[in-house]
Length: 285
Image (cartoon, rainbow, N blue to C red):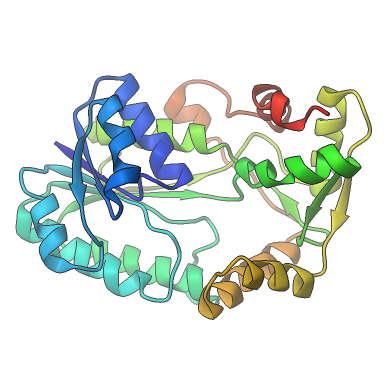
């Protein structure tokens, strides 16, 4: 049995769908029973409870041999991930797959990458087999831009002159499914990127090509982005951490790509152009 955490988020949901599509038995740990109900249609077992609660986690891990650790970024994330790891060891889990990030490098002072680094270290020291999945900027970050693309033909993001390598969550989920089901990937760390490094202006050109009209990239000031995050109710710690992440990306003008998705999946990673085609109804006026 495989336990998937974070299944109500974008990446965890994609992993759940990928496992279901290949008829691989799995269980999800969700905080909200109503949100968890949709996973029954995928054939999943449902465990309900808070990731921060040790008893809940221990119960959810009963009978589990492999687990996927995916968490929304938060102030207590490292504490919770360490506790989850320790509970997994106690439950006899043989393989833990953690979703981390390519930006998480030793010595970083940024809060979210630093937590990922410390969590990775804790997992490696646990004695379990592990796999670290480390994607970069998700192509799905362009989904919220549907509103401004429809209204003004603009992609508005607080990323300055950043160069990114947009990486499709669906590819990441497929990698995780393969890593879970093939021991060749035990105790390995994988940096995942899309097929091409590009500026946000170049990404907008991909949208223009598919949509048949000019789409422009507008660099939103970080402080304006901060106000938006605050208005939607994110806690102060997460607002500051997310803004730090965007500032980090904004200063990167030399993003590199890896061939890891190609090597693992046996096909090229999903391009921005293909992503737009796949979601075209969202962007059409």
